[in-house]
Image (cartoon, rainbow, N blue to C red; front, side):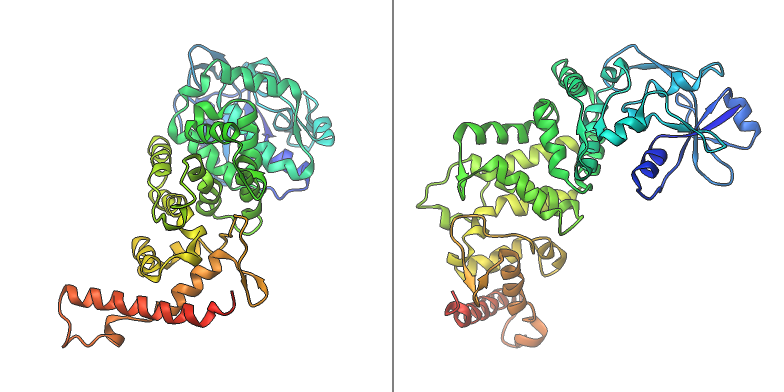
Length: 412
């Protein structure tokens, strides 16, 4: 029995990244032998074992044979006769197919170190095309390593397009799609993840709503600040990723411009409160991929109120207080904090105290002006009962916001 360290741990070490997780491949063993050595088995069809002391994962060397569709249509062979080469050749990228023996010797059968030096993401073998998950994984690696100059090899991108053309992506489970996308949204340059999926035609099958957004954008040639909306959305995702790792913020800021697909007349846009049309796309996306509820809430808030927020300077205070009520900011102030990075994206720029006014900070300031008004401190419960208390609380907040806005009007 021989044990090898494989995959991400070696790749990250060669790249100078900290190593957080280590995966091991066991050659020349069987499930029975592993159990005798007190390893804990955690899978039947795919025997992976947990080390009794380190709790790290050890997988038996295996081969795979495609016998169906999607990423689950495989027959696995975990025979003790499987070699290290046979195991590594089934992996996705050469940079992930490097092994290390117990003496620290690097075993690089597919030139992974050479591709690391050349900054190339290249598939190991033709078996790459058999697993549709690899389209998402390669897009994610491209996003993760783009700041180092990594790019996808032309022949690998061709195979990714072929996987999409064969409609293999349709067999991926919603959970797996969102899992990979969530990881893609957590990396340094998440906009690259979506750019790659777009270029290999994967969006049509993974995110038809976003694909519709892209297609309509290109067809309409819509511009804000003389920039295509598709470019704007990717640039906004890139911008916001420099400030926060929060996936709710990153994903919602990226999709907020989806409302531009549906035209609103210039006459009515300033008075548009909650725009329902784009929310149908958002809800469709969230339902299909089983996206977490709170993430859905933030997406709906940022996308549905996009036009309202972009024109908040011209909105009356009642609508602004209504907005705070609808997003339930009194009980969930963290929702408002997720809006702090929002900007005015249109051609109009507002100036406050001789500096550019950031939309998100303006919202925080508006809320701060009225957040301390409460039933206990501002309402005489002897004069108001039942629903009247709610109405009076609302009136006081609107009046306070009006007063605050009058004080800063001269600065605009």
